[in-house]
Image (tube, rainbow, N blue to C red):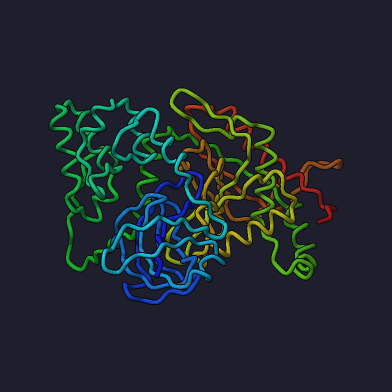
Amino acid sequence: MGIFKLILPKMGESVSEATLTKWVKAIGDSIEEDDTVAEIATDKVDSEVPSPVRGVLKEILFQEGQVAQVGDVIAILEVQGDADAAAEGVQHVDVPAATGDAVAETIPSFPGLDLLDKAKAESATEGLHAASRFYSPLVKSIAQQEGLSQQELDGMQGSGAEGRVTKQDILAFIAAKGKGVSQTAATAATAASSVPATAAEKSGTLTAPVQLVKRMDGDEIIEMDRMRRLIADHMVSSVHTSPHVFSVVEADVTNLVNWRNKIKDSYKKREGENITFTPLIIEAISKALKDFPMVNVSIDGNHIIKRKHINIGMAAALPSGNLIVPVIKDADQLSLVGLCKSVNDLAVRSRANQLKPDDTQGGTFTFTNIGAFGNIFGMPIINQPQAAILAVGTITKKPAVLETEDGDVIAIRHKMYLSMSYDHRVIDGALGGTFLKRVADYLENWDKDRVI
């Protein structure tokens, strides 16, 4: 008889923890290899934890709703057959039934996922906020930006699992401290954040007190789901972080529309999928980012991080009404066919809730197509820690004045608004406006004879 420790796998470069949202298997259930044992959620996507071995679920170490760190043992499985285990590369130890001696920890190898190396885990806790208790990267980042001392951080009362300091805890502490409250009272403020919050409180502003909303007869109260709360927090945080400034241009995309209409049927017949406007616009954005690399940046304190890679996030609406932003990595290195396939693949997997955590990581610039909903243009909120986000509206036919060799004429043209929100701390109006105009130029000057 052997014991196997099921460990929370690494789910992406910057993902260090996940919430156990559901145990698919119960204690005593038989588990086949690759069966889903639990469902987890990160701050980006929902995922599943499969079992790499056959066995029986003997013990659950994290309850639903609790937060586990990458590398934590989340469940114990009882397995049989040393020969089978050896074939799968899983180590087992015999455990005397009467004594219940401690067992050796075994680390599974999940398909496509590397487990957190112990040395890497140890080094991750060193640096600015090295301490005996765990602090998530987000908490450490907030502490660094706000200039909190290690003593202040260690003195906070955490409302998370095992006293862990959560984002709400540290923000409550900062809010109390900013009002001139003593350190003792500020620490007490973090303890207050452990009181169950209402839906309105969970989506409230970072530092302002929660506004009490009067309820009227007939109102329906809907509790925000987990993803909607994350989106709300992310959007409020972005507005508090970046001074948003906006630019808008109108592009004549007649050549682009006519070219797509000409090749879309043959493309679908050859590739088995549609060619939409999204990859065409993303290609133009990628070219413009290469022309203006200071738009492809992030801010870290007083430092500007100039990104080497051009990773374009594309906002995708989910059937639930929520929003997710999968990322096309190195978009500038892909052919137009490659962009089309990447866009379609991410869109399909987004709607089917099949994105992997890495699919939403590493974005350096975000694009959103609000024209898909019939909108003319809008002012989107920056997707932190990026510095800009571009939105395109619906393409409409309009009369326009064209300059020709024989004089000005009025013609029917396909027009589209492009709007961009950008962080005024690092992108001024001249740079933002010139960049946006360059994107429009690439779309307007589309080669009508281009072969794809």
